Image (cartoon, rainbow, N blue to C red; front, top):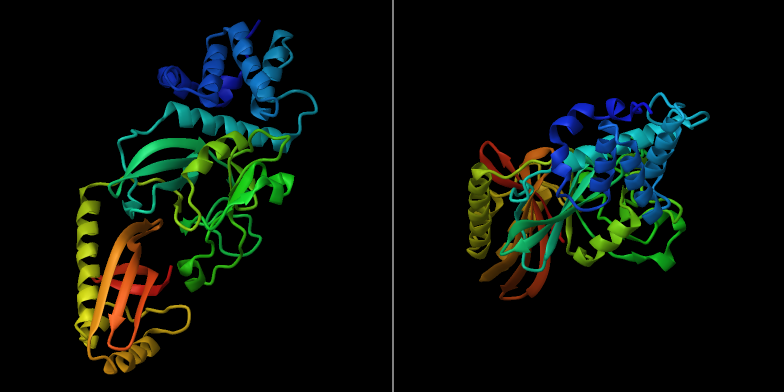
Length: 389
């Protein structure tokens, strides 16, 4: 019985050199990798037993079904390549090949769990967990907030938009890149079967998206239809999609209105330079607070970039309003707490800053959650957007 060419059509070199990486990895992907390694070693009966177990546990796992079918056909010498069975739908087979490659890479090139993503500079006390989606690895990472610092918890295979990332317009079938937040939870009984065991709408378009005139909506984290275990890496209309059992595992980590979801083209890990940048920005935010509290309006306005705008006015209008408002104040006190800092993917010198603001003056007092976008310009941090979070 000759070995099918499944391995050579995927990641033969990677499997041969790093197959041991799967030996201690739990879960479906590790079992899949072991079955493919068994094929590579010409142990087809063992491979068939392993993949048969996958299919039995997950009857709608199409990739496992394909591997099992290939193995059965290999016994009869009727297979030449991965998914080359007669009348196999070409488009679907290509998607499953992509899924096989990605799942193999996820297991066989695991990252060091001690590494921290560059995007999570600081989490506030309410944010118990944060998510980072690395679209290049089809992976969603979960990080726990440990005294403001991220600590790796787990990760999941995910699907993104059919046409990749960098969403610009309604219906472009792309997944947005940016800093978003879980808005709410939509339970299964409120959803069509397409969305699986639940859905969590994200805050796309965010303030930066709107500033750049990006359109569209309805970008969710959601599950898969009841007849589908998982989908190829690029198969959604822009949403981030997980297997239903993975979404159910993810659900306890999600807090509506609180949990950040950073979607990036490529994971970048934190280094000492990031620590310096975080300290510098926190000091600048504190100086902004002091300048506002001092009623030195000129010093306060110097923290805002000429390109600043919010949802209703540009910088000149903002400056006029602030000068008018402050002229009526005899004293001001501003306190900020629960600060979070998230660097923006594809924008290395921009940070989303969220905090709780306590404002009081001789004629007004209020509390609010505020969001600012700070960008480094000429080596100085400047505010380019400010509004309610």
